[in-house]
Image (tube, rainbow, N blue to C red; front, side):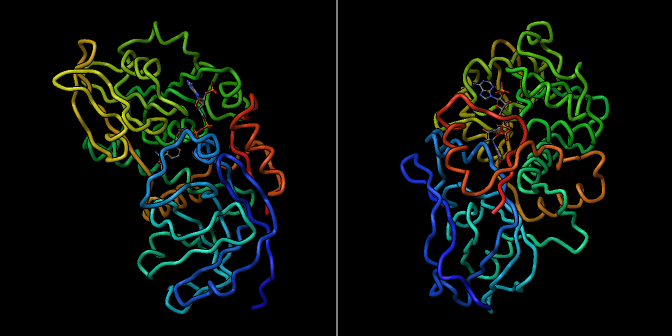
Length: 353
Ligand SMILES: NC(=O)c1ccc[n+]([C@@H]2O[C@H](COP(=O)([O-])OP(=O)(O)OC[C@H]3O[C@@H](n4cnc5c(N)ncnc54)[C@H](OP(=O)(O)O)[C@@H]3O)[C@@H](O)[C@H]2O)c1
């Protein structure tokens, strides 16, 4: 195989994103290395948070910057267990020994077991056109499975679920829990994402509520999924208000180290509960509830996400989440304005290499 002498890659340093030509490191092509050529990448809120330095980066897996992508293997070392030409998607929760996926080439190194947990194969029948992203959906699949394990149930028929945050993750939670029988309602701060969800046909106007409705909907939900970019005491209190006695608040995004929900017999470290995927009881504001959470995903979650999308597209129209397509060269400007400016887009931004 002929490799280029240089390729376009992005970098993130001290809040600054750059895209430039860098040398193709042929010396990195060892028996334990795989090189993927991304076909398309997705921009995640976590990428934007890393640019804005508002995300705590776990040392065991490194930064997420450039982690949602689908691509073709163009080099596979003979100890990797993979072959050139295979289409793969990437799980960023396994190893930090990799380069960013916001690039024309992505390098990853590891033993066979690590690579198998990191790169999930697409089969010949996995739909790729129109583009969609399996990683964010695999995290939702994982989180709902964690919840089901704690609640000892797989079916949510008749259960009322409130979702705070109608971003990409919130909408996928809605699709997933609806498919399991739940009756879902959303509470989203701004109108743009509420309208996006209705315009795309994901949910009805009646299901898309503003925060103003929370006061009138107190104590209604068996489960409240909390999935905004940032969880502060106000949004946490919204969840406590909406959930009913003995119900569960499911934490997904937006917690940071040291965040706490005050309660009895003791306050809950909500960031730890989310990262450790615990299920803890607490009495807060006189209400007895449970706090749970999900973090990341596994190869099995990817496989389930891919199967759900491939076989039940009408229930999971994830390709329709894509609202904007840009070129890699345009990434710095877009991500900077989203991290530091007043610009925001509903749906998913897709990046073409
Ligand atoms: N657990 C995991 O494995 C995992 C995986 C992926 C993502 N996440 C996390 O999940 C969160 C949501 O991601 P996403 O993909 O859904 O992002 P997104 O599509 O950008 O949506 C962001 C959501 O957060 C809301 N929001 C932002 N700031 C807010 C505030 N100050 N108060 C209330 N609501 C606010 C937005 O409401 P508006 O429309 O009003 O702006 C929107 O609903 C992020 O924190 C992300 O890091 C977690």
